[in-house]
Length: 386
Figure: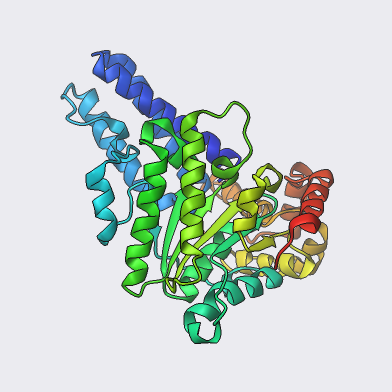
């Protein structure tokens, strides 16, 4: 996650913790204010990112927050802290659960619906993950020398790294564990190294049952990056992760456990960890063909006027990320919805015109500048491993 997503989810967590503290001190009014703010932050997240992988989990948490807010406003005592959804009590009992069918609670288990066909472009990246994961799972006998277990996806925000990882899990009918690196490192989630151990123990247990497991770690630089003023806990987490990565890459092991890490800041990664990712794949901004395909996918859900020229739009959108393009299409469509309601809300909204797109482009610039792209390209030349 990045940008507004981080801000909104971070705000929700802070307000939830502030609620907990106020509630424990009996400060009812302060508790209500903070809980309302947590609800508002999550509602805004769902409004802006309804299709995000975390959306189902966030909706569940939001529903719990709303119930507790209603109880609090009615003067009823709350039996549990509102941040219960986020906390992890990592102890010996939790570690024993790793052999069960339930993943560690700090990992979001999803059955991805996205496929490679839903991802515009990225053909080189798709082929690289096919060779590293899909082919070995289908015919492990063809890989007597083993296969990569660690894959790093790096590139600008909004280019499809998460979708690519989810599509892999779908292609092999595997289990997809979405892990927020910040959650593992967070002090109020428990001891980080035990979180890491629990995660990998669960993944190995599922793999022994014949289920391929994809561990997707978003913003992996937060977990494995080079940091100044590190505390002991952070060092232990990184060492534990290194140990687990070495374990799944043991050539004597045929377990199908894979770690896919995604980062927008590959230059922050510590070099010993870079080497553990045998495949390092650059996920760049979409080229014209990919932009054209993405526009087709996005506009297939809305009504377009005859004057909309997707080829011209694809040309105009050079330098924009896939996420940028999605937001632009959504904003163009919202112009028609806004007009519809302002004009009385009768009938149906008008089709989206070329002018709607052009007006949005006047207000919307690419989220990634050329200097940043140059940094990605330089890092790719130094560390690429397809």
